[in-house]
Length: 205
Image (tube, rainbow, N blue to C red):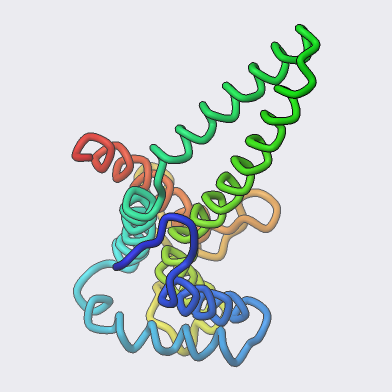
């Protein structure tokens, strides 16, 4: 995937549009249903071979892993660190120039600071690129799971999750407030795999 240091490629923008369409599935039922049904068709072979809890883990793990990889590939952390250091340096120089009453130097540094701020804002735009691409993985997975538990008659999920010691717990059982078992399981799997993936990517990189 081609990248640009100061902006989005055409594919990034297309991915952004796709992500927005996917996100609308949370509020537009036909889109959410279409995504859920499409994901079910794609996942049906896997669902027939692995327990549903493992399938959820695989979906969450894929989301966590893709997020870690995309962040490593698309975010220019070195450039961001360089800009931060440069901004700190200029700020210190401005304060020193003020202390010695050098108004000309302050004006010059202010102009340089404004230019640097433009570079900073351009880099900040690129920080959203990995999020957009990872949403193309995580949003369909989440919409699918939500559809599964809102339309159980059309889905393949079992009624309960088997846990050690606790035993069988209904996927739709409430833990705290609106937080249900399936959502806690998905988020927990996604966060844990994401942490492991980021550590591996950091070591490899």
